[in-house]
Structure formats: structure tokens, C-alpha cells
Image 1 (cartoon, rainbow, N blue to C red):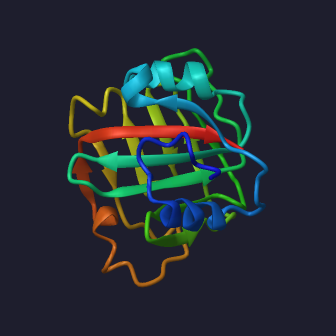
Image 2 (image 1 turned 135 degrees about the horizontal axis):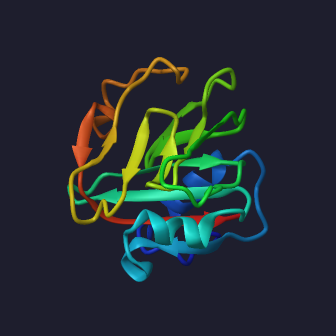
Image 3 (image 1 turned 135 degrees about the vertical axis):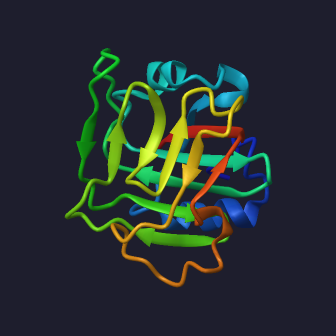
Length: 171
């Protein structure tokens, strides 16, 4: 029950599947942040998640799609509104609740650490500031990721969406 604290992924089989995507099986996973519990601002996300190490982010859209990303790089906020940092991470990936979508090609930007946004996984998933109140968050299929057959992945088809909830946890 490594994701026992998740308010998004409640099915034990889905939890095991997501944990199985991780490069190493953790002893425990601790929830750092929940949009429902802590507020949906990027400021709050960075306040609770920056400099915490590897994180697993799980997102649920108001349409019911559950997906997310993983990075071994720590989120880092420069405390400036105009600065951001691109980081390579050879272990980062994005996923849907049903299957791992793709590993990131380490030759490209894996995560974008932008204090004006929530988590950003390459150009494929971007969580907007206050994404629970607007449809500025989006997913997109991008050749930067080593793609597999993505025509079945509705949640990754260049769609803006509103967030019902998202969580970030540390392993």
C-alpha cells in the first residue's frame, strides 16, 4: 500500500501498477502536496515540493483522466517570477493510470522548473497556476518523448484541461 495516502488512485491494482513504473521500488511514499488539501496555486506546490528530491505526480482532470509524471530531479524555485530552469533526467517518465506511456529521452529537457507553473514534464504535461480554476493546464504528444502508440492515450492529445486534483509524493 505504498500509495495509501493518495486521494486520486484508490484501486490497489492501479497503485501497484504505478509503483511498478518507478526505477527502484521505494520503502514508502510520503505525500508532500495535494491541490485539494493545500490549494491549487503553483506557489503552494513549490513551497511544499521544492528541494524534496524525487517526486511522483498524479493528476486527475475534471473529465476523469488520471495520469502523471515522475522525476528524480528535485523541483527548485528560484523565487523570481521570470526565471525557470530546464533539467535533464534520464529516469523521468509520464504515465496514464493504465500504463507507462514513455520514458523521457535524456538528451532533452525532462522537467521544467518554473515558479509560475506547477509541475511540468517536458512539453508533454504542464500544470498551470491555479489549474483547478481554469483550463490552462495541458497535455500534448511531443517527439521529445520516445513515443509508443499514443493514439489510445486520450489524456495526451493536445488538450487543455481543468484539474480536479493533483498530488505530489516523495519516495
